[in-house]
Each structure stands twice: as C-alpha cells, then as structure tokens.
Image (tube, rainbow, N blue to C red; front, top):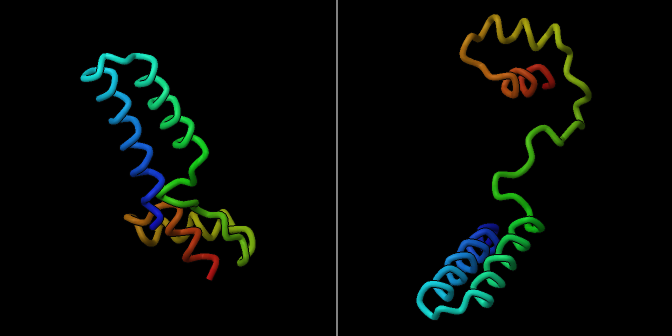
Length: 85
C-alpha cells in the first residue's frame, strides 16, 4: 500500500508523455507531468526516515568511534544503533 503514491506518480508522468507524443496535445501532456511532479513532491518517501527515533538519547561519539574501530565493516548508522542499546 505504501507504493501506491510513487507508482501513481510514475504512471501520471508516463501518461503525460504518452499524451504529448501520441495525441499531439502538448498542454494536456505537460499538465499531467506537472501533476505527477507535484504529487511526487508532496507524497511521503518510500525509503523512510533514518535516525528519527531518538528515544534512546543522543549517541556518544567516542563510543561510536570505538565500535567502528572494533567492527571495521560497520556503518555509522549501525554503530549508532548498536551503542544506543
């Protein structure tokens, strides 16, 4: 269900381009593409938000640095999540 708005955005943009190319109606095609861009701008993101849950408090930079030194393949986000637990 969360992919409905992004799919609708792409569908409207493709429909706008198709109307412009096949029906030779530039104004209607540009209108559909503009609506698709507007919908894409106001729709929530598909990926989500990283690091918005601050219930465990702020991360300690020294602990994050120590965790990343002990786990060389860990990202900063992984280290923050691991040190907040």
